Length: 328
Image (tube, rainbow, N blue to C red; front, side, top):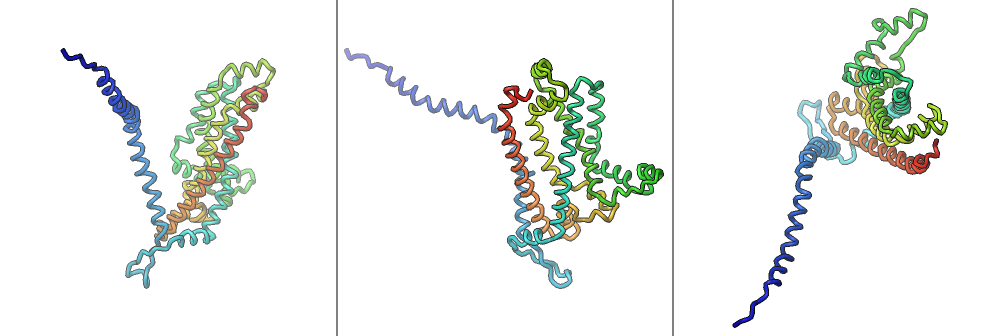
């Protein structure tokens, strides 16, 4: 009678060979669902962001040369960095960046301080009807930017503005459009303060109440609590709002474009975006428009990187101070 062959070894071999396939199936199940859910985002991101950026870079490398008086058509030629050199060498383009820098220096600190101050005021125990004030302060942002700009142009225009009429009636000769920078800053502050106030107020509401109670027990007053406890604890929200505000400020277009039709002090190249718009739709120089847009995008990326690094470094230096409660 032949001895019985044990079956333990083949079963062990089958188990070992099945282990990699089981792990591969588990990996597919683990990463398959997230990839399916993220696929629409990547498709839209590619179609709405990457493709237009690539096409703008492509256009910026070419220029159309017309022969004669322009009736014989034109020829598209490769210019390399020629359009970038033209844009950087144009005094109007550089002047637009100067106006933009002045706008950012006035608008960003003013809007951030106003939104943060109002948010701290709404978060305090002294304010009643918080919901009403939140809605009232947010309403300007709900108005479309073009409509808001038209309303402010009406208020700025002499002869029809009740504000100008009231100032003239008391002997003040006001010319709000003679210097357009404060007018543009005022329009942007009016539109975006309420939006950022809501973000700051939501961050303030997320602060643990125990921390604020401990500060009061230690003798901190409302102002001390606001500046030493609340503001450091919402520094991440301040950094995000500051970053988005910088990016949005570099895209300034609507407000000066509306003012361009009402006052000669706002020229068609007052901001870099207006320069690109004028080059594309008035001069039909799409290569120059694309090059100026790419330069503006690079400036926005560089400035965003600087703001991100600055806020991260400052947050890293002050975090232990805040966590230990030394700020109280």
